[in-house]
Amino acid sequence: MTVNTQNSTPQDSGQGDSTNEVRGAVRNTLQLGGSLLVTFAIALAIRPLMARYLGPEALGYFSWADSFSATFFIVTNLGLETYIRKEVAVRPEHASDFFGTTMLVRLGMTVLLMGALAVVLHFRNEPPEVRHLVQWFALAQALIIINACMAALLHAKGKVAGLSVSNIVTKLIWGGGLALAAAGGVGLQWLAIPIVAAESVKLAVGWRLAQTHLGLRFRVDWAATRRVLKDCLPYFLTAAALACNGRVDMSLLGTLGSMKEVGWYWGAWNIASLTFLINPIFGWVLMPLMSRAASRSEAELTQLTRRSLEGTLSVTVPMMMAMVLGAHSWVRLMNGPGFDESTMPLRVLSPLFVLVYVTMVSSVWLTMMNKPWWVTAAAVMGAVLDPLLNLVLVPVLHERLGDGGGATATALCMLITELLVTALFLWRMGRASFDRRSLVMLAKTTAVCLVCFAVDPLLSFIQPWVRLGLEAFLYVALILASGAVRPAELALVFKLARNRGAPAPAPVAVPPLA
Image 1 (cartoon, rainbow, N blue to C red):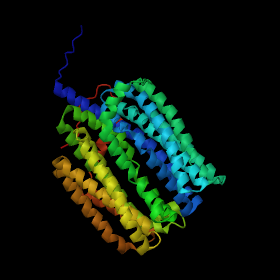
Image 2 (cartoon, one colour):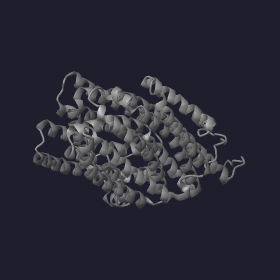
Image 3 (cartoon, helix red, strand yellow):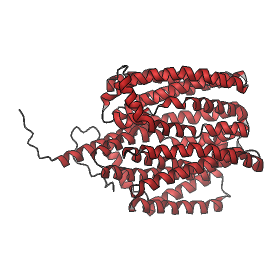
């Protein structure tokens, strides 16, 4: 028997494990981030094309059909994504215990929901092309939810290279299909087929990758699945409540306002949603990383959470500023003529971007602290409050502001709801959310934002894009000069990524997480 005579201690081993996980998380972030940049570029080209091809009213029908079908299929989420990232991250072999059975459950639910959707559409007297479009979107939603779980398995395992390539290929299928449809003048009812094709390919690739990296097997085990679904209940209620936001309100806007209002709102959301480029990374990378940190100690989890919040604000606040200060220019660039009424909703939606990311990090901390019902309660509160606010504000602002008033009201309802949810999460976290370092960073960033807002009207005589560029330069200069963002720590992130292949890494001087 060979004995390892190198000096080591459990503490050293723990530090090495933590460093390896940070390095792996950085590697996965860069891989996924690269694929997201490519898919972002594809979406950036296709979404303006759709806005110009359809115009506000037809685009309103298109967006309404997507939201209406997605609302029906919320129930098939089952809460599995969060459960997978929390449990499979530390027990990869557990995936085969429940995945096959839940696929059968979802298949049965899909058949029932497709039938119910057809009945509802019949009694709503929607035009035939809209009914066909909703049914295609419904099929796409069933595939999207299954693929999200398949991807969660790979994220939990930390094997994302193949998934990154798959994301790019399927986005090309989606974008290419829509471009061909627009070029050929295809009718509205067929415009969801490209996403069905893309998600079908993604399902085949994801299954193969899960078999390779996790040894996933299609096995039916009702007893094990019942236990899993019981544990998933708070995650399911949370996911269902969150999915309602942005879905139910758009359906209400089409009923209380008009399909044009839905089109204008989509024009604003079309731009705002691009700022959610890094959204998947929180589930794909951060949650498994925090799960492993929580398995070692609460202190390490809290430290990681604080730095994650700090990094989140560093990235999201400047993107918010770019949207607010350049809203009219972004609307003209992305949507073309006929969408000027999207400008005000976009400005209202801009702070939502920051709040959502803070909420994501906070909800992961609460989940890892075994407080998922807090997340559920806040999400359900938001799901109830948002449509109630829409019922009150959409008719009022639609009447008082005229065109675009309904879209602005829907954006305002979402912002108010998210603000309350974020405040509730941070209150529940208490001192685990921010320490002195992050509060100082937040204060400096707020001061820089106020300076940029004050300078904006003074530069109103300058061409809009030039003005936005000057304000971006001013923001970066002030952020760096104030020390709100530390370039040395950004360099350390790239150092971790560059050294990711080392088989036995030496201890890396990771900055303190407290």
